[in-house]
Length: 165
Image (cartoon, rainbow, N blue to C red; front, side):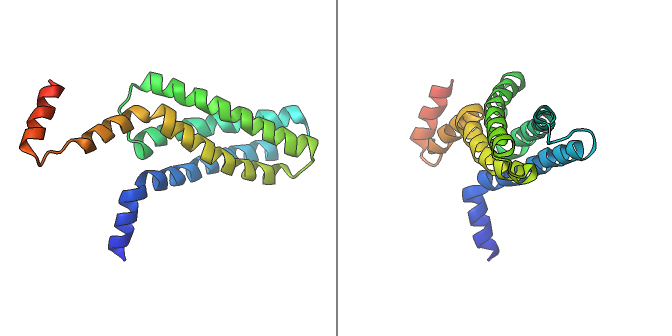
């Protein structure tokens, strides 16, 4: 059984780590949102609802960037450029978040807390795809190149070293 778990982790480790980090990020986002809407902001007022949403987003994106860089994708890319891409991608999904929140809470009058939870699942998938395909792709490209090198074949190994130099 342990071997089966290890095999699954080797195959899906990145995705498993992303889901765990996504859970932590979701907890941070919802926690800040609930704290704000339970104390100082009124979710019945559209402006205050969106303010709570944006503030919770800022905290969540900061937590997400740090954990995604270190834990999920184990990136070694330039921090400033990568962080700028990460926040830009998250701004896109913030628009999705705000649009869905506005539609379901302000227009359709659904429960704001239920909507916040529902939207998090949509954002989890959207953010993973953006991170995997756009932001952290350089590391994945290097990993693919390393996997294609056959170090067991001395000729290929020498050819690869020559090409690297």
